[in-house]
Amino acid sequence: QVQLVESGGGLVQPGGSLRLSCAASGSRFSISSLGWYRQAPGKEREWVAGITSGSSTNYADSVKGRFTISRDNAKNTVYLQMNSLKPEDTAVYYCKISSPSSGIYWGQGTQVTVSS
Image 1 (spheres, rainbow, N blue to C red):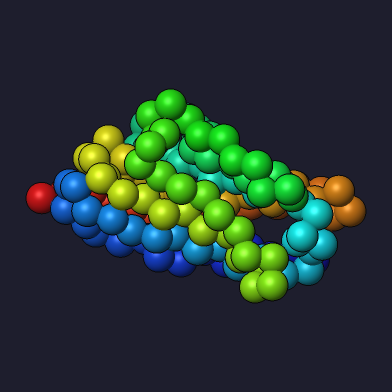
Image 2: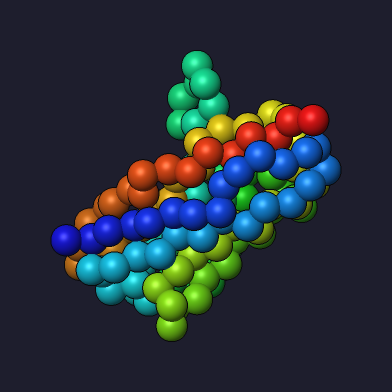
């Protein structure tokens, strides 16, 4: 059974930073692709950033240059460093793992609120 546990969300002022973490268990983490998504109130879930097993990264245009996705295979953890946060970044953030051996799994989500 694959489990993803997210942490690091919270309340931050505009222009501030947060780092989200997502720890995985029960999967072959090092060969999995990982992604971060978010869902704002009243909106559909949207893709934010992704990182392949070879550590190639991609970002949504809305976060490019502000957010950085990274992975630590030794810790089975994926991170999302978020800088220069804006009120429109407010959402529940979810991590997703796509494992060739185990399939696709989602974390439970962590709330990020950007407000003064």
